[in-house]
Length: 274
Image 1 (cartoon, rainbow, N blue to C red):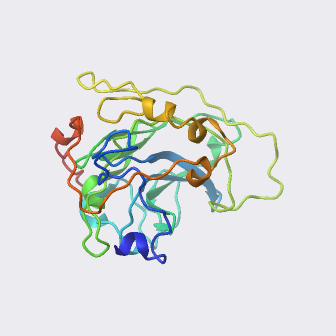
Image 2 (image 1 turned 30 degrees about the horizontal axis):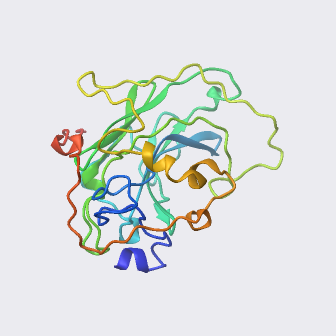
Image 3 (image 1 turned 135 degrees about the vertical axis):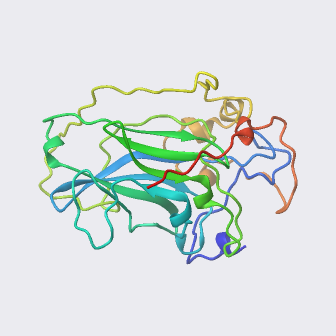
């Protein structure tokens, strides 16, 4: 398997709770499980503007981390490669990923007048989970960029199938975490610092309410309780340190999940048009 054994492309250890596990120590045999991430934004400063990376993290990885960008993504008010950064506009991120992540991302530029607690701006995204899903990011209640699941569809070169828009239960986190691995950190950055948040709102389709971290198609509760060292000991940061093993499986196993995914019946939404 090129994708998981070629260290020039991926240094991930592989998916422990994968869809080829038909029985054993797995919360939902036959269903691949993971820890997905959709970023409303991760911020830095570029050319005196706030540069906000709005991204979806996917795995396993495409060869050269290249997605079907032209057919299945869309940016409103796009900045082309030759254009200078400009507030209120967006460009595709030149960072695609590395050996530990593939990032599908665009950069939105925000005027610095929104900094230092001077005024608020609204950010958000909507998404439809599943193999025919999408993510669409918004600023000031206006669409910024759109990602269709087909952009990260099957890739014969790296021997991977369709990556889905996150079906796992997720939580919301707002923080001031910084990393030199993400952006330059100025040595005179003052601390303590503050980020002002006026409100956080979550909306759902009234016909498809899903408020649970333990849904029938993606159960988590019992598995967590059966692996307390992994989930309650903050000093253990690697699975191998917990003393728990990996479930056995064979590549190519055809397992039948006990519960069908409600997202399999969803259909694609129309791609935005210029």
